[in-house]
Amino acid sequence: MKFGIRQKLFSGFVIIILLFTGTCFVGLSYIQIMVDSLERILEHPMVVNTASQDIEVLVVSMQRNMYGISLSRDQIDIDHQVREIRKKEDQALGLFSVIQKQVLGNKGKTLALNTRVHFYEWRPIRNKAITLAMNGKYDQAQAINNTEGDSYVRFLQYELDGLENYATNRARMFTEDSVHVAYKAKIIGLITIFLSILISLIISFYLSLSITRRLRSIRIATTMMAKGDLKQSLEIKGHDELSQVAGNFNDMASELAGMYDDLEEKVKERTSELKEANEELQRVKSDLEGKVNERTKDLEEKISELNKGQLAMLYMIEDINETSRQLKTTQKELIRKERLAILGQFSGNISHELRNPLGVIDSSIYYLQMRLNEKDEKVHEHLDRISQSVKTATTIIENLLNLTRMNKPILTRYSLTTLLADCLKTCKIPDEVKIVEDFPETEILVKAEKEQIRMAINNLVKNAVAAMNSKGTLTIMIRKDGEAEAEISFMDTGAGINPDHLNQVFLPLFSTKAKGIGLGLSITKMIVENHGGKITVEAEPEKGAKFCIRLPLIREELADLPEKTEETEETS
Image 1 (cartoon, rainbow, N blue to C red):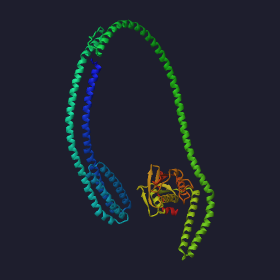
Image 2: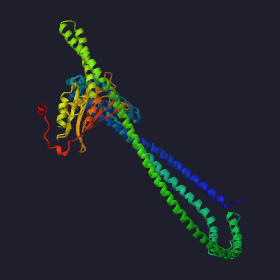
Image 3: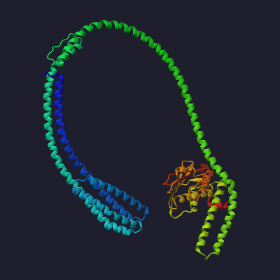
Image 4: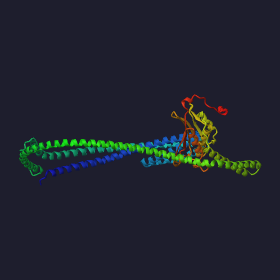
């Protein structure tokens, strides 16, 4: 049976593939064994040791936090320390879970489980010390930390060190196994590779020797034909593909020689035809270039006109947007003025009609309190409630009158820091509300009417106290906003404002409080705007609110005038 070149190459290729596959299979088997061993070496001790060290750091840090709780006398600091302890406790439990998954051997899993159990047993001791500290029993909390807490911390450190030693020993054992496997894999891999290379070389040499000789003769003949010698002939040996190629080559060479002569004649004819066609193309090209230039000029003119139209349209859209914004602002202002007008129509009459009955009620309460001095305490309690309600109604009437009959302020030069400090003295602030004053050392001079500014400040402080349920921190800050305005900001820690209500808080009669009628912020806005300033609000739910008042600064030429004091006001 005679083999062709295809059969010979395919047989050699199959043998080489089988050798390569066997070599790869053996090598991959031992590589997998080495990888598994290395994974156990690297993953087990590194993860366990790192997790154990991190847990030990967290345990020591938690004990420091416990000492901080027992030594601190600030409730806020205690709450912060407690949150830190809870966060570190969750981190430690997460690391314990990592250790239990990674640790190998029954002994290691038992050590990890016992350490976690002792960590859980430490929790009641911490909770007990925290409870004592939050109740003001700091000495007892410190005693528990010094005795039971320290002993648990030392014991946990001892057990965590034991886990690290166990993981290190297991890693050493895995390393010895990996070295032995790697040595065997190296020897077997070298032998297999050597045999595969040797057999592949023998097969390749045999196949190439039977093919390259005849290919060399074909290459020489084709090279000569490429140089122009078309009269070539090859010797035909055998019946394989190369013999067929040699026969086909001989036939092709004889045909090419005849075709070459015919082509020479046809090339001469076509050359003359191409020359004439080229001259015709040059004439057409010059005509097309002229037409393209004319069309280009027309397009440029049309594009220029289109750009002008687009620019005009953009200006028109911008004007429409600006007009829309102005209409929205005007609409809001008209709504506000309409409410003020409605209030102004009946506030005067209703205040007169209500003040007289309220005065009679207040006088009657005073008379009854004098006459019932030794009677039932419940009667006095109800009388006090009536009196307080009368004061509330009177305040509402005063706010109505202030809103509708606010006089134009008589402006006087003031130091903003001094003015704000005097206004805060008259505000009713509960003891549970902490006031933080952030005032600059340098003077900031403004023109204002003191009584109206006091009313605006009082409304803002009252709203902040109500938003914090009379318990929290109110930060008041004074800053220069550029060279033309001064900014006073009031930042509370209350419940904040719903974003849907931010655009309505300054409208008259708008209120989210059960007992409010929504006049305080409207009065404040009127006062600030009458002083030539503006008021803004920023707030988010559950994140507090920030009200900012901006007042114009005194011009340079008025800065040297003497400041008006309380004495000059009283004298005038």
